[in-house]
Length: 250
Image (cartoon, rainbow, N blue to C red):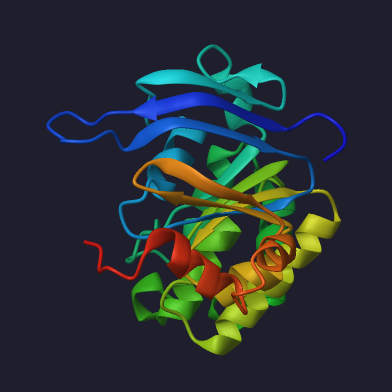
């Protein structure tokens, strides 16, 4: 791809204390501005570990990461200003209302007052949730919580958005709303790094994907090009199963 990567990962390794094998083994990746980049792999492959390191939640054992020109080791405070994170687990306070949750997260980003309120209500309207603004999160369905979780991670308009399984366990309607929104913000310039187990979704959504297994990147490229390079496979899921195997993972 042309231009400079917005994220550069070089020889990234992560070893957890007590683990038999490294979670990441010399991972090298370039992610470019305005991509929707999919990180795909079985359970325990290293997807969440990679995302957690890029967000500054975990320190790598070795290797180097540069995000938008900032070195992860020395420039994390600058990196945190330009990224948004939507974790796999719902990161909301169940006894607070949707509005209270989003106000809390907005305040963490330095947003205040009427501007924040208007922004929250606009985002809730986009996701079909405005009439539930003053309802407790504990009363929400799984799909509604996912949508609020996404709003919380991108209220501040991040340049780079990390999404860990954003459509896991939700209904088709909620999934379509989320994916349409991701397309829309990507068109406006947001770079998205996304993990998923849904191969058809990744094939349609992502400009490029990397398939990771047992901490090693085993294939990278545009989904359609990867399939074209392996004409014996009809779709990304078939290719993925060929590369990672059909054995069950914990």
